[in-house]
Amino acid sequence: MAEKYLLKDKVAIVTGGAAGIGYAIASEFAKEGAKVVIAELREERGVQAVAEIAEATGAEVRAICTDVRKEDQIIRCIEETVESFGSVDILINNASKIIMCPALEMTTETYEEIMLNNATSMVMFSREAGRQMVKQGNGGVMGFLSSIHASISEPNCSAYTAAKGAIEAYGRTLATELAPHKIRVNMIQPGATYSELTTPMYTEPVKRSLFERVPMKEIAQPEWIARGIVFLASGESRYMTGETLVMDGGYRMDGSLPGAAYWEE
Image 1 (cartoon, rainbow, N blue to C red):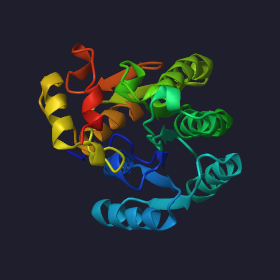
Image 2 (cartoon, rainbow, N blue to C red):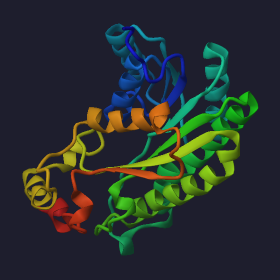
Image 3 (tube, one colour):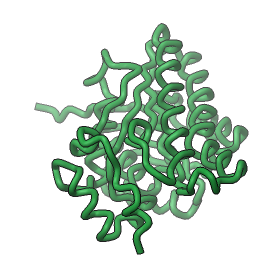
């Protein structure tokens, strides 16, 4: 029996796909037969990721140097993807930035930077990809990397929490607008996950605090989250839109986060 590829010949853009969860998503998509575009600000990292994933999977992969905070670069990325592979079938908005700051010490500039990196950039990319998908007339899939911070509050993380909550609300609304075009929109909330962004935070005090609250007593590997996103991007979830897939080891059942442990010396 021939091997079944869940994303065979689909064209997928993964923002921030050169490291962490984004790299794992790009790699798992390639394994499932997709043609993958890594939209990555760091050009050298993007080229390296393409070489590694292409060698490991034999898939068609390319990197497009893209600053997701800039509308003109997003448009160019969509155009170059279509020129290279003929369509855009899947967009995974993964690129983000964590800045932790007490709410009363936060400047307007810091707040706006966090919102730009974690919400506004995703709105812009999904708008341009959505226009392309509607034009193609073949449906499509969009995924937004959210966080359990969208559901659970933590000290010193107010703007990041607001951004993740905002992108989930946006995604649900976008799902209603794009459903008539057979374009599905879903979000995913990873819990504690090792990545370039988060690994420096996982000091021993933080891990001890986490394991008191995570029933599965583990920090996720990026590949575990990526498999959930493969599900959302594939026909396996064809009747699912406007929903949030939570992958947190049971974290939310406790209803709290480590809080002060992040700031212990």
